[in-house]
Image (tube, rainbow, N blue to C red; front, side):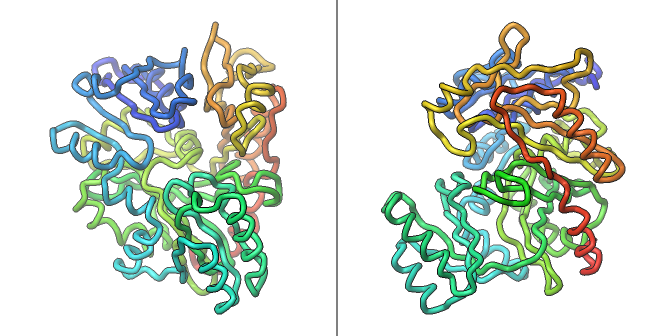
Amino acid sequence: MRTNPSLSKKFLFVSRWGESLDIINTIKLEGHEVKMYIDDKPSKEIGYGFVQKVTQWEKHVDWADVIVFDYTGFGKIAGELRKNGKLVIGGTEYTDKLELDRNFGQSELKKHKIKVIPSEEFTSFNDAIQYIEKHPNTYVIKPCGETQELKQLLFVGSDDEGLDVIRVLRAYEKSWGDEFGNFQLQRRVKGVEVSIAAFFNGNEFIYPVNITFEHKKLFPKELGVSTGEMGTSMFWTKDSPIFEATLLKFQNTLAKHNFIGHIDINCIVNGNGIFPLEFTSRFGYPQIFIQRAGINEPIGELFYKLASKQKFKINVKKGFQVGAFIVVPPFPYEDKKTFNLFSKDAVVVFKKNGKEKEGVHPMHLKKVNDQWLITGNTGIAVLVTGTGITMKDAQKMMYNRISNVIINNGYYRTDIGDRWSEDSDKLWSWGLL
């Protein structure tokens, strides 16, 4: 879907880890000019051959029509650029804090009269263990600050007395010591985990909103280590009881802080209500790519309208969208030796010619002689998406596309979207769809 040449804009993407390559590449293919900067040193090769890379993004600010920050932590800079009259998609100091400071996020939820799950913050493993011994229950360990990026450290307990959480805390104390930083113990609530996401134009939310179901564990049926994400299923809707009970209550606050971008709130819902867990006040990964698969208009034009505070409705597909990561060793861990041995510069091969790359989104890749090669250091190769009027249709399209991709040592989950049949029944019965 190419853009009218007269509408062509210049986009500067400032990326933390190169996560937004697929969106950047798409905007380039739509006919816009694009430059990409990556902050993280081991990720610098990502995007080479796909898009123009720059080493100092600040030198290209005057060149850009739109500046996009793809991660939290850039809120202060984004705010200053907005004050100077630049069109910016990205966080603010307030929305950065919503995501990075779990306690602040919880206090803001309470301030907006949204009920939260009881939680306590700790800096000492011993204090946390003593707390569980005094208040036995089922808990979740949630690292805060920078440590929360290591998704495998999040631990969801299942023991009613909290004994499994105590054992994990003792193991973390031996392996991490004082470097672990502060963390939360949150009471575990059972139900359906669902995320509500929406774009915000500086004044109000842009409709429709997005309902997302994440699959976080490495193996099918939610087994194995927590990876942050292995795949996601979703749909768009013009109204949602969960959105109205959570994100919509932040509309005036986000407008006051001049937030322009994408925000998501992850919740557990059950027959007793809606319980928000945490904010993601930026693009979600792989959420944004699966959203793109369901958006019928050019993503560059959507971003420009958003950045320039226009009021509009997003043109989206009916039905469902799904996406699954294909990953390689050492994912979800970081191990340079293993990555270099098994995965670095491995080729992404397509069995059929023609439209073989349709629905296959480049992740941590570079392009050499028109070949897609794996780079970076985490082992996330591609995301593959599918769409359909029913969840089964979307799954079928996605897994057909996956069968056309050959990546040596690649692995992926075979059950993305399977939970929908049970989750949807529960959500209907609770009046939340």
